[in-house]
Length: 466
Ligand code: TRP
Image (cartoon, rainbow, N blue to C red):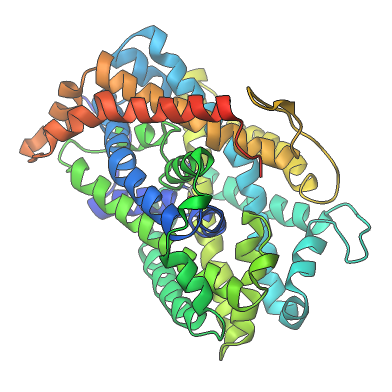
């Protein structure tokens, strides 16, 4: 067969690229807060079940749709199914766009912290919450200002992304992943030891290991679902792009399990570092909303460990690279879609899209604390509400677009393209896939029903809008 599309250089290159895309801010910045809000151990169990029963089959589905079609996100559905299925791809690519708008800003905050630890670690230690909010434009005396630091660093972060993408991703990112991923892992292990040996951390550890089912509601399950899909980079049809670059020799079933396992491991590690550290330092009642966790609560861990400042710098550097590899893969898939579909020039498309996303993201950062910019949300129980713009953006992607795109992928693979076609794709090159019957049931019935139920419940009950 004629191969006109690019292909991954090596097997490990693909796995690392996919893992680099999956392991990102979601694992370290979002996961611990969500796990805390969902009652610790109970959230971990729900999350794990979702990864196994929905995450793995869905990633497998996306990869096989991509590899079978060898087409861009939207055309893939058209090519394998019907023109009317193309909306699934559109939802996916729009979701990726919205996520990138704020992702690059949070990446900018991480960059800010790299410099923060290099230049003024004692200031961070003395008031870690204040430092975080000052970056976002809220002064300790309650007055607000334009969050120039956060915005400036976000601009730098976005520029970095654009430069790397224009220069070509493959070599640099692949090389970095090979060192960066294991390094991140080792550092997390070191931090884990420090966090769980901090005086007062047992309560946090106990919290993460015990199940508080009282705290679990549909909202928790939806949060876990959104988080799992977000963290695994699925439900945005991005693994379709990745799959389309994949050689027919690859065993996608095995790669999927490897990627999902790595991603979940990093998320759990982060949870077991950050939650006990919060309990030990700022105290449970002080635990703010999810987002501040990775920035605020680790300060005391670094303060109280030998060479803490050094580890702080390394930690934020690695988080920066994790964010960078994820953000690059997000932008890359948007750009490659635009260039293939609309025949835009790569450089112009990259610059245009990056600038637009950065500007929209400014509203995300500004609405954190500095300005009362509101978004809009609707559910049957509460009617129309006006959460902060930043929250509305995350609801829109995590709670609505990702599940809808994932649902679309399941229905597509289960009922239109048919599981047999996906299974045949997975079995290319005589790969053994013993779990095919289970996969068929999951993708045809269980996954779509589960996602649909959660979507409807979330709309009907109007879960607490935290
Ligand atoms: N998975 C990434 C993270 O955990 C973020 C992300 C969500 C992503 N969807 C994506 C990255 C799609 C690349 C492609 O931070």
